[in-house]
Length: 432
Image (cartoon, rainbow, N blue to C red; front, side, top):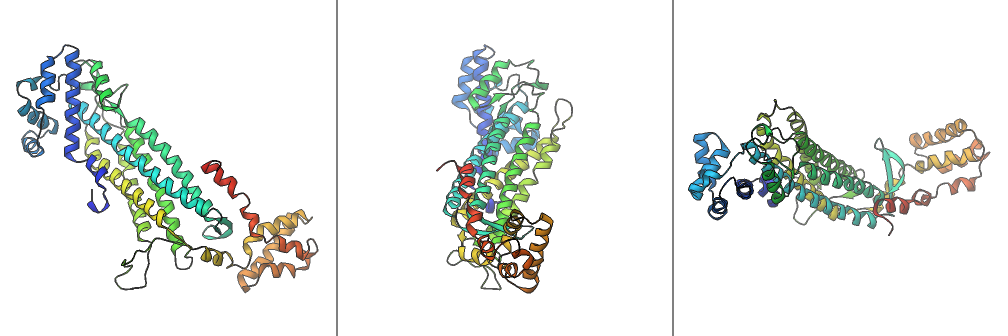
């Protein structure tokens, strides 16, 4: 985790202090359940809660000798608990602690990411409604197509992140499972009631078949969803980057007083935040393939997944958290230039109405093939001679033989393209 791209709440989830706190709670709750079953003395379970402590430096010191992190933690814990510590970890295996802890950490991370997406949705909705009637050119293949509105653009991104919100909620539910089933997952040395009790206390549901480890298809799905969310962020970031290009300048990241755009060129105002989000999205997606490869473990378990998850767990969640928060700030302060949108809309001399003219001619009796040829013939004059589309059409005898000059002019009404904006936004945001 790089501090430059980390926010404290998410980063703290992956800090040793939080990890060992979760380990302790797993062991202590398991002791409570074992005591209720009569497997260990109730005083022993009480002693674990009352005297249970640990020191990160001491755990690291012990691990340097034992080469085993869970044993190092249990050894340090026993130094504080005393004789009753012999009842800790009864019938459990390391994966019971590690996998259950990871489930808690990923659930905590998911809660933050869900809140992040909700904040971004709020910003997108506010700006979409603000600019629902701000007309701009829609583009396909980066070429002018037909008019749309900036509000419709943002509403599309809102709808995408609304889907992402549901995906994150589903991913959180899928990852939130507990495994306290012992070696190879058979519960031979520990009662399933212990797993149920720990799960209830930790906010997790029992894993149906843990095989000693929680199956990694759950983790693969979680990271795949993070990758999709990151891709949605990149799509929005790329749109902003394109719209900020000098040739367009329809929208622009907020440029704060004192901000500098270039060490060499004082005039520069670059879309650095959106470019940063594009890069961060690549990092999040890079976690997806290793997570997929972690699914195929040997037999009931191996630890080939462990080193991967120690890296991608923190990196992917911390990075996505930062990117979502950054994008929310970008959208919240995004500068919109309607006059530039109008300038660009007018740039091709009315060509954006070509389909309306095509349909008008066919409705007036001309064949589709003939109408397409006539419209394209006049459109090419605009491309090649910087002509005015309506003027050329009104001078074309084949066109005016089917439709009057006045009716042609009526086909160039911009509001024709915005008449269903409310319908679209109501589909996204509901009736207002």
